[in-house]
Each structure stands twice: as C-alpha cells, then as structure tokens.
Length: 504
Image (cartoon, rainbow, N blue to C red; front, top):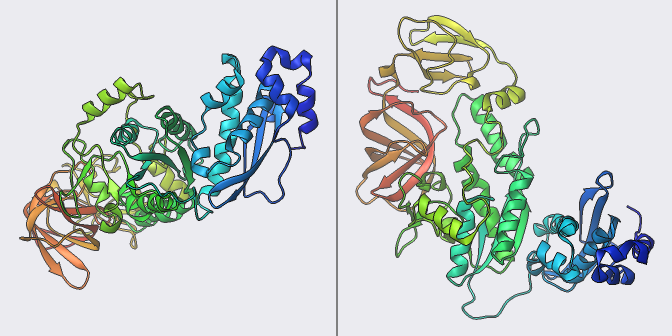
C-alpha cells in the first residue's frame, strides 16, 4: 500500500469530510499517525481495496509497550479517521491496554454515524491482526505491575457461552481478567464460518470480551496445532487406532500456550469454561457438578503442574444456570447451540478428511477366523464397535472387533466378541497416587464409568481390570481412572484384553 498521507489530506477536503462530522474532519486535517515505520515490530491489515476499505497498521514494541505506531489506509474519510484514531489510542499503551481498545471507543471518539461504524471495526480488526503477529514473539505483553493482591487471570475464550460466563464471573470476583482466543488450523477444504475455530468465532470472542470491559488477545497457534494435534490424529488412524484429539490438544498445546501467554502478561492464573473442579485443599482434578456436562475426562491428560495454575469457574454450575447468567448479562450468543464436530473438520466428515490425507488403502474385511467377508478402502474408515457402513452381508449383526493397519485388515465379529475386561494404558499422567487401587474407569468423554482396579505394569504402563466387561474400547482412546469424583490418572489405551483371554 502506498503512503497515504496525501490521500488523507485530500479526504479531509470540506466537500468530502463535512458530511462525516467535525471530529472526522479534524482528525483528517491533522493526518496524525499517517506514514510508515522503519523496521516495525508488528504489522496488521484488514479489508481490501476491492471492498473500498483497507487499513494497515504498523507497531513498534519495546518492553510490552507500543512506543510508536503508524497507519496507511484506503477508503472513505471515516476509514482514514478511524485508522488515525486507533494509532493515537494505542501509542504509548501496553499491548494489553491496546487489546482493550474497542470499536465503540473509536466510533465514539469520532462521533461516527451508525452506518460508518464499520470503518471503526475495520481499524480495530487491523489492530488485532498486528497484535496477533506480536503476541508470541515478545517477552512482555505489559510492563511489570506492583499492585499487591492484584491477581490476574487469562481466560481462554472460544466465542461460546461457557468461556464468556467464566470471564464474567472471574471479573465479578475481583480478578484482573484478560481474554484470549487460540487461532487453530482448520481443514481448508471446509467452509469454516460455522466452526468453533472460524474467524467469526474469534471476532465474537473479542466482541464479548470488550463488552465485559476486558482486553482480548488472539494467539496464532495454527502451525503448532497442525503439528501436535492434526498430525497425531492422522497418524493414529493410519496405524489403526482411534484417537481423541480434544484430550491431546489440552495436554499437548492449549494449556501450555495459555500458561505461557499468561506468564508474559504478568497474570497469575489461566481459566477456561470447562465443567470440571479442582480438588479442595490440594492439587488435583475432579468431575464437574453437572455430570451431563462434566469435562474432567478431556482435561485429565494435561499435566497436574499446568492444571494447578488453572481455574474452572463453571465447575459447580449446571449448563442451564450458565445460560441464565449469560442471558441476564446480555452476552452475545447466550442461546447459541454447542459445536459437536471435531474443531478442525467443520463439516464433521472426518472420513473425507482422512481419505484426502491418507489416500485409499484397500484391504480385506475378515471374521475372527480369518475368513474374508468383503473388502474396504482403508482401515481408517472403521473403529472398534462400529456396526453400520461395513459393506458386507451376514446372517447376524456384525461389529468391528479389531483393526490391523499393517495387514490392512478389518476384523468383524459378534457383539459378545467386543467385550473386554482388561485395558492396558500407557503415556500416563498421574494426578495423585491411588489410595486403594479401586475406582471407576472411563474410556469416552460421555461414556459410562465402569468399576475396576489398577494393576501396575512397570515401568510405564498400568492395567485396568474391570469388574464387568466393557464394549467398543479401542486402542488410541483416552482412559481416565477416578476414585469417586477425583482423577487418579489418565493415559492412552495401548491394548485391551477380552474375557476369553485374547488381546487387541
């Protein structure tokens, strides 16, 4: 984009700018902040010339403070004035204070007419594009604070109602709250507008944070997410296992990134809108009060060290209570339905996604005796316990009871051949030592908790011996073992033992 100082001055001519109000005209006449920086720390753009509006902001950052800022812009006088106003608002501010500047702040400062507020929104979008570019690259996001007892918390905000209410409750409790949204990789073959990772979800999270009077940061974790979660997901299916990407995301990425940004923001805690609780009086993780919404299962593979610095404000609440709080507070999206798909596959067609990345890998469908009953295009199209979509005819209902990716075989059998009473678990995360060795094992986020006991298998495995057989338990899934409501350990299922002594 060319230097727009001359364009700014032309836009300020009385014939053009008077219709936008005196404040816009004054701002344009000053041309404050127009131009470029030498070696800016961060650059952000929003809009497009084809849409008749484009803003580019350049920031220079030192010690968590924006020491200088400049803009270039193309568009109507309101767009140019909004860009200039943003530059003035953030110059000399900390990155966190800049992240608190809102569309209303800019439009009110310029007395923009309602039909021109989109110009302020464009300038704020460019500001946050610049902040996103710098948030993971600087050592500090604000100067050190010295206020005693000033507890701060970084709240992971997805754009949904749960995280919004978590932020609201913590602010009401007196915390210094900052909102943050992770920008994650999503399948480019999908329309992402409705997904929990979509650009609109990020913007909604920002709008909600600003409506609560708190700063909002967007954290670009797309490449790390692709490496740590998406590649894991593909690799597990390729190997004939059934992964749990949400649990692995929490363990490998989400909480570590949030904790790092919180530290560099001078904040003491991380919080999310998960329905889980901390163990009273000691480190640990426990089920949320609302059993229908309990999310301790998907959190349990995260390290106790990370979870020890986390707050879960919704742990003692039920979903309907959360929606009621959101409605009373006028929070945007308080009635929005929850997303159920895998976040990086917005169309929820994970078999299409696997096929496009792994290609066709044909093989045989066999029974437990090795008799060929049919053929398939890839073991990744199947999971343990699956009944529909097998593509074979049989005189009785058959289920997937085993997968052998090396041999490209899908093994099918009767319902009773799905039963297992031993589950071997590796890649363990211990939350506290078992007190009795007896408890409850859970193998899906919404699955039944089955009584069982732990048998240690040195050096790094445990076997969960179940008191009654479980069905459709697959290698690759997450296993969580509880004593009453408290998490003892979590890990990845590496093998299962059936009641007849066979092993998968």
